[in-house]
Image (cartoon, rainbow, N blue to C red):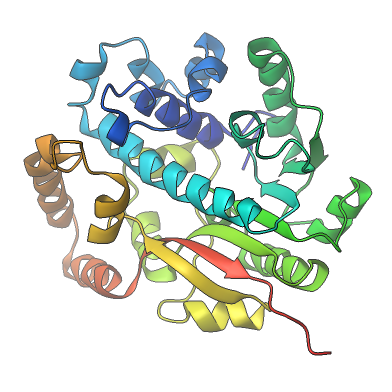
Length: 332
């Protein structure tokens, strides 16, 4: 998640994409993270200058949305942010009393939902360099974090989530909502399994985890043919390394002690219908439909026959998911 002592540049990249999306004039397809624009300044943009989003915040918005690398990533952040916001709000209106944001990066939910979370301990868990950088930006741009925010440093590949949280004042008996956004693909499989097991074993029944993840087949295609921000992530020393086995999602999570609940496949018709429809009934991204189709065709031409077969199989059996996982009731 971070290299050479630098903060995670992919965390800055995703925040910049949310900042860009928050400038959308049409409220029906505007990214709700209005604070990201305040956190991303010239120094942060310099760290992600290798990606088009590193330059986009200085461009005219209506011109920039025709850049497929910019718009495609902003679209992804729109769907991701809205779904997670929606599920988090539902959790706290349904009795959750503690929030843990894993791999928090430049997450702003403690600020954006300050009223909802005012009586809730919010644990932001992340790698040291990324967290220290974020704290400095929050202080400079927002005047500091709300009093209920607790920062906890972790190395997910080496440390136990349960131990890190307990040292930070986490109360296992409280019904907790966990958010793990843009994190799982960077953590080695055993580290990710250990994190899931810790949540299942050390959380009150009724607690839940919102997890973003890839299936293994899609991950392998992306690793073999990296493009866009995937290539940037590899170049920045933040490679994708983990995916859930294709078609075994429910079983994989059950083995860790968690039950698969509501899911959303990013890029599916359902994700478009729920989160990417304009007020006039058109879908967000229609202006680039032909461009994206041409890009898909061009990408296929760069592959050999085995690569095309692998990509087709991944498209049929793999996915890019947002999923809510529940901690079940324990036998009495």
